[in-house]
Length: 440
Image (cartoon, rainbow, N blue to C red; front, side):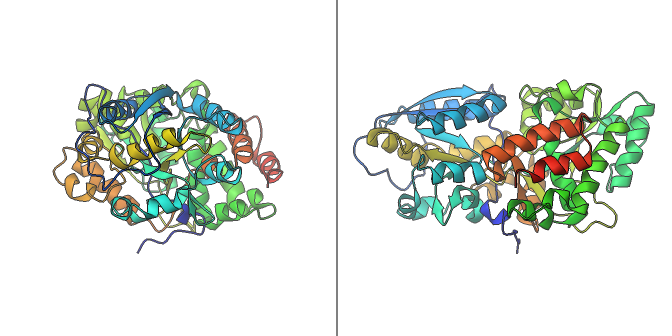
């Protein structure tokens, strides 16, 4: 049985991307068990994210739902990084959209504690057959103090190591299984004029992914669990200090593409470096597979390899432990009118996950947070990758939620800023620990 740490029980499966932009997804084939109570449905607002292929599944799905006569949804899309700040400001001002897209964890807890999002516990309980279609543990990070404030969305999102097989063949190298292998490959690829790793350092959270895995591989899940619990000096743990140093050693060895601090993930520029052969490796969310497939299907089919994060000799963390986004969620604003809330609930029941939508996620190269996905994967053109991700997630001893969502908004902002300074070498390991310990 999968064991999740005290923190990681708060979520299990996460969001990924949707279908390719050229595809069309409908929601008319509803599999919901009922409709929301609470009177007539009105027009609800929804904020979501831009970027191929994730926005296509959302906009097409909503457009189809709007034809059902059970309320309408008006969608506005934002880039990832810009959205995070905008939605927090809007929620804090009581001006949030009806349907709030988020990552759960500490941010959602803050909304719930402030009374800005609906307690959906009783409503979800009244829709038992619908709730049972989701992965059992996918509700975790949408739950705070035993109450449900978020409905799981989209697909699994563990962090995966991606490799350009053509470049590995070109230099006669094998995929890395240990950190020593990684550092050897850094030298090998640099000697051939190839950047070892692509990294969208301009987006900050992409750099955070490296520390999430290094913390685990070196010291195990307790290193971050202590931080989450507010234990004194936990950012200065010996394993954490080692992780900071290893990151800076990788930077010093030219492990990342030149100018990585100006590369952004919102534009998928980091992914482009991998599939255009500018970089040999990349650590990224599983959703990157679908994003690359939507623009470079031939590369994904013939030259893309993938695997887990390498082990670290002497480390305490299980090599099967994973990190990423344990869940994406839809929450409903407590400030919305009854008619708006009814429309939002109807969409969650009859628009978010139909058989058509589940198929579309799988066709895009993603594993949706629906139990029906397991049987469908076997017939997918991407079954090798999808089966790997499904197994990766369901067999992980520990699944760590992304830190910038696990922590409070204030801590997350400090974290991302300090990570940026760590990777750009404006500060060293000790200063990073001191700065972050001040947020505990």
